[in-house]
Image 1 (cartoon, rainbow, N blue to C red):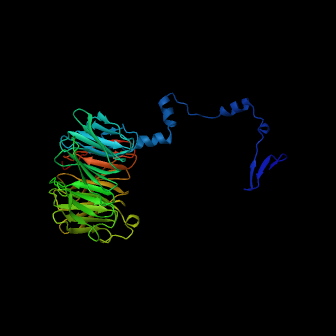
Image 2: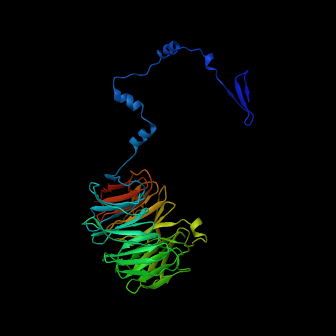
Image 3: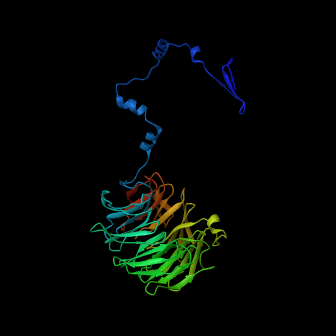
Amino acid sequence: MENPDDNTVQLHGDEEIIEVIDLNETEQSADDLADEFEDVDFGESGDGDDEQEDWDTEDEMEQESVQDDSDLTFTKHRGSVFCVSLDPATNTLAVTGGEDDMAYVWRVSDGEVLFECTGHKDSVTSVQFSHDSSLVATGDMGGLIKVWKVETKEEVWSFEVGDLEWLEWHPCALVLLAGTADGNVWMWKIPGGDCKTLQSPGCQATCGKVLPDGKRAVVGYEDGVVRFWDLKQGSTTHVIKGHDGHQGALTCLACNKDGSLVLTGSVDGCAKLFHTATGKVLGVFSLDKGKAKEDAEEESNSVESVGFCNVLSLIAVAYLDGVLVIYDLSSQVLRHKCEHVAGIVHLQWEESSSVVSTCSLDGALRLWDARSGTMVSEYRGHQAEILDFTLNREASIVVTASGDHQAKVFCIQRPDR
């Protein structure tokens, strides 16, 4: 309610009184204002650059101070970059897929785009070169899969499945496998398109890998079951479930170099070691003493990535809470816990050393010496989480994909090389 006598407005709801200023009462003229400003020292300088520095915004100053250890930044994507792969033949080409429904094949040395992989209808979440680098496959969340011939830069095959969970090339043939949300695993000869399906058990095929012999595949499912498949027959050789399986959805898996062992990870907080010939459980690795919790997805610390060291009898298990654990494979003893400040997304061992690399939600790439459990080096440059990365054979280059819409190339320098 307004009171004309005392120039105030009273708001009864909040009991707040706001004074209304009568500008006429100030009666300050333009000459008065000019006189006041004569006494103000604006620190005038003949150097215009100095003046500009004084007026830098906080955002600009923050950008100037951001650490960037990368040697090249790829900026073509217009959304988060979800996945990255290097061509295995030369390690000179990268393919990245992103939230912008695009994939790009580009040169690692200078970032030049060789060709764009267009026509996807959803975020591109899976990309990979074939074993001989002649073809590259791109897959989006909606299930549209395309294959491109690198030499001609042309699409040579496409197929649409259900919602895509993972995509992987056969290690020694032009055969492409894909796992879907409906639980089917598809297998095609490319570019002919001859197709075979590994039948769905009725739940998501969350992760999968062809074993090095090229004759078998291991697939993990949402219900915690692990299945080993004979690719030629299209039938299972081992089904691991119940107590021997996981108590929650599988998130990741890896095999050792000769394909005799498979390591799996799950939202139940456990990693499990299997013998591929017999399907037997050889070990259970957990920070909770091997006991998966009943409500696995809500309470347990999910395993996000696993891997075998090629040169020592070691395995690595990366957890969502930011702990990287190194175990001795023979004795199954915990050797080292490597703490991160944020959740780990992915790990990868170097081909011919005991160094394991990790990327995490804080946007940093870290290299760890598994013999000592110490961090060798840390590389920064991304302004958001790293969602995927890959190493070249010599472990001299890392290519990362990030939520900041960028992919980056880091040249890894280590004193022991």
